[in-house]
Length: 246
Image (cartoon, rainbow, N blue to C red; front, side, top):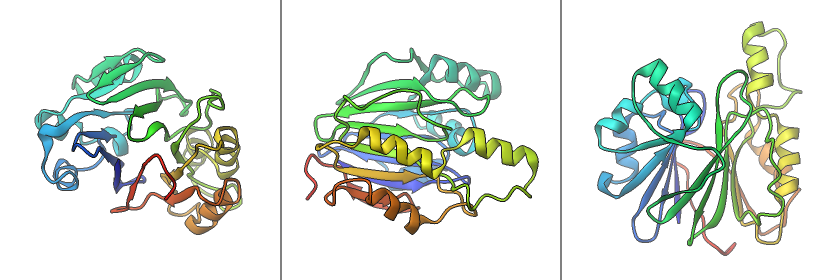
């Protein structure tokens, strides 16, 4: 399973999963449609769907591009209601904590706290990668996945408190604290999913001014087995999400 990062951060978010057979699952629609199409070599007909976490512009702002390209966007019932109310666009609503089959992918949305905004993480299963845990724009994860033998994780690691400036605009400061995952919170989550089957961890949505990619990557590496691939989501990054560490 190939993973491509179209972009990750406040300027726009978009990720691509491509199976060995060429089937595609998109995560988020916050990047321009043309950028998405380039990332998938314009194989729009192979897209099983796009998963949307929440309504904020850097995740949903290009939804019309995707819908106009014939791509179905899936979101929880709650997020679908937000999208319809704010943009007038219709996504495919899914009940939280219920499985949905999208081609060879099986997906499950679950609520995560993101200030006052409805937001979801996703469990994604495919025979080529087993179980992927995807969480972005969450203050923390309210669920315990320790018994699920997670093989791959893509988790927000937005900031570290020791970089955060309280001199920032108060509203922005509060949103960071209650809407994004701090390094120590990310580490505690990873400790709960650490297991012998864990193969890779991607760190998503790092803040430009409140993070340090190499420090974050190294601190996460120190928590897990040396064979686990710990990577930072940057524009254009690609990696393989297989069933074996090498």
